[in-house]
Amino acid sequence: MSPRRTKLKDSGSEVALFQRRAVAGFLIIVVCLGVLAARFVNLQVLRHAEFATRADANRIKLRPIPPARGLIFDRNGILLADNTAAFRLEVVPERVRNMDALLDELRNVVPLTDDDIKRFQESRKGRRGFNSLPLRFRLSDDEVAKFAVNRWRFPGVEVVPYLTRTYPRGAEFGHVVGYVARIDEADLQKLDASRYAGTTHVGKTGIERFYENLLHGEPGYERVETNADGRALRVLDSTPPRPGKNLYLSIDVRLQEATEAIFEGKAGAAVAIDPRNGEVLAMVSVPSFDPNLFVNGISHTDYRGLLSSPLRPLLHRALVGTYKPGSTVKPFMGIAGLEMGVRQPGDTVVSTGEFHIPGQSRGYRDWRRGGHGRVGLVESLAQSVNTYFYSLALDMGIDRMTSYLGRFGFGKPTGIDLNGEGNGILPSKDWKRAMFDKPWFPGETVIAGIGQGYWVVTPVQLANATAILAAKGEHHPIHLLRATQLGFNAPVEPMPLARVDSSFIVKMTNWDLVRDGMVAVVAGPTGTAARVFADAPYTAAGKTGTAQRFSRTGDEVDKRGLTDAQRHQALFVAFAPAEQPQIALALVMEFGASGSADAAPLGRKILDAWLAPPPGTLAPTPTAAPPAMGPSR
Image 1 (cartoon, rainbow, N blue to C red):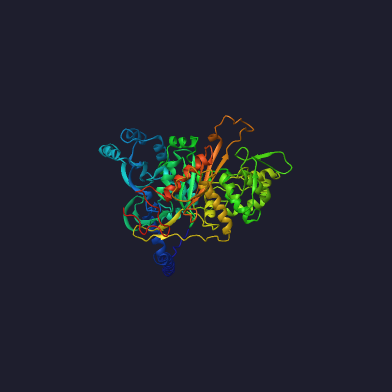
Image 2: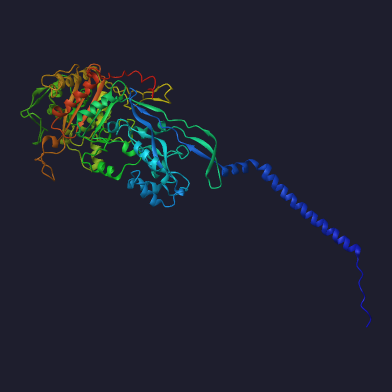
């Protein structure tokens, strides 16, 4: 065999191939470097601000600073709702090895209720372990001192100062001022999350709730540097919060105290208004409750006690309590009859003790057996003669009657600056048809003329109507807020008054006649409240009323064994001085024999407290303007 030939290398071809591969590799590297450079430019130049912000967001957190809640004062600058310094017990869960053991041992040093522990355990849900959580609020000085001595035994537990809402007057203003309480799930759905960041409490009832936007203020923020776990390292800068506005109410503490005291714990309500401007001077519901119980969480025991009380202290009787007005509607009926021309000033009726609708045998009684004889409007008001108003109501007709009386605000909310006001009932044919799908009967018109039947009013409605009557038909919308103030060194800003409705001006001759009748109630020889006001240093105009809570016999239960006080509600409306009224009031006693015996004496004491205060007591504040400055603290 011939030997195999060896192929010679082509050096030129190999060099060319190497060069092509080297160029291709270089180009790939250049392209990769170009992509990397482009990406770098995109991240570091074009989107620098975006990623810098995102980096800071991971490193820097905004921590909200809750604003100080505005304070609440009465018309004279007396404090009704305050922010006071207090101490609470806080726990950092991650520093506690055995939480149950710690809580059991801590009970021996600082009293802890089951409610305290339950709230604490619930607050731990969804919270990081290094967050400090409140365990017990409002520690006493003795409790703080006792814990300080034993602090070394409880790592992760601290006593922390804070501001808490307090109500110095307690139950006296429980319903009007209301209270704040911890924000719950229902509140979170309604509140602006950004505005309430860091806030733990919100107004729940009364003025605290209605004027929440004014009282709350605006939160501030701290820019805090944190580590990867979210733990705060240092504060970079901060924006201070803006405190809420201080509120000055139209209520006078002295009159409020006097009004509450006269009830002596008996269930009832009273509202006093300045008819010249609609300012509410006193608003009392008895019994009341201590709003301080609700601020940091009311105990189950206390709450059950309030709910189970037969006198229902949580019911704001002045605002939502419903009562038959009884004879207190007679002055309004008198005005309606005169203004609509159904009665003339000189018209009289004969009261024989029983009134009959023509063609019917059923009788409607006067309160006096045998009747009152021949009487006109003035004497009918003085003696509270039912027959005059039975006849007037029948002649007027239910729809005309309720249409006119609706102008006094009956049957609808007054619009007072409180949430949840009741409507009352101003009956009519259409109302009964809508409610019961039944026709209206003449007998129902008759008893409506003396405030019975389907009639229902709230005390604030009755006071508002009395104020309109006292103002001779002018309607000054009633209100509780008198002025606001942003900080103690800021000027007090009076609230602008709502427009006065002057379309309802009663003729002076008609107003004088009804006023004379109401004056005769308290000052005439036959007046139902004449004995009560015999020595009054002013001339008042009033009207007593007695509304039956039960008839003498009921459909289901025989009520004949009840006393008059158990069977009746006692009412009284008044304004004074009669010529130039400065105060109009309405009050209800839920258990009273009659308006003249039980309600009128209370009304006299309220009027005395405002118009003739005992020597050395605070005189009524002028109505021109609120205090010029907040009190020094």
